[in-house]
Length: 362
Image (cartoon, rainbow, N blue to C red; front, side, top):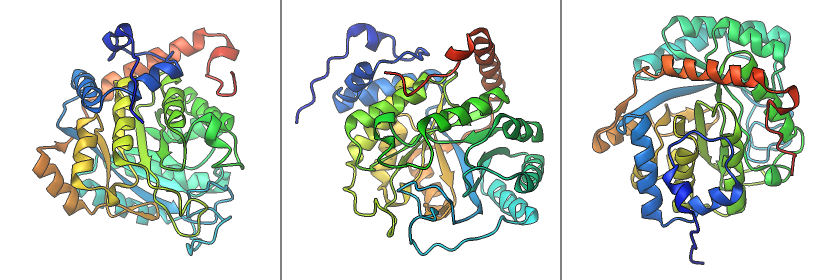
């Protein structure tokens, strides 16, 4: 079906400005732009805020694998599905530090640690806090994804020096119930609110190719863009179809549609790092090159993403050389912190009921 773009001139002229009031019809109109026009505008906005040839490099380690009580239909770690993945205990702190040191030597600037929990227990959190301190001492940025957090847990992680907390929205509010039933969209927004209140940076994105409609991809990006401030890191994942999960036979998403989502994310969140995340192992070099051109400027380095495959470091280094890309140095820290503090002041000035966007509102 041919696309019929109806983006008004005022919207196009305002691209690159920071907004939190994007309407769904505006976002769908951006998706409907001719492909060349969309990528051209995304590249323009990208160059306003970033070195177009610099890519932030992260490494992700699973610190506790399997037997998660959630029923996320894409996830091999869910205890609801038989994917052949065994349950593993929380890694020892020294093992995590060893992996972090190897990531640093390979060129990573951020080390992300993920645990298959609904939310962390206090006895486990003590070990997690020590991991944060030890990895931080190596000179790496630290990121964790541990499931849902309450305000007290988020503050303890912040006090230990955690830089980023990852908690994806996964998909749009309308499609969410078809993918996950054991936690609500509001639960996810509440965790992001706790992370912000604790003074940490947010890593939040979603997964494409789960059978969602184009309007759901627009709806996901709308939710992310309504967060104030925008997430500092926005991972855009392509579904990895894992045998044994309910989504193992879902129809593949057209790579061009995936690139469109990268470009629209760049337009809606100009200062965010947009991460080309899960699914890269099956992407051609051409698809990845288009993603970087569309505004992606972050990747995961290494041969695994928690339990799924990822391109090996040598392949990524060769691709970087072919495209003239280089790892980003940590030059955004000061401005990121200033933006975060300003946004927190704006939030504090609002009435309590208006501080965080309610995805359940019509």
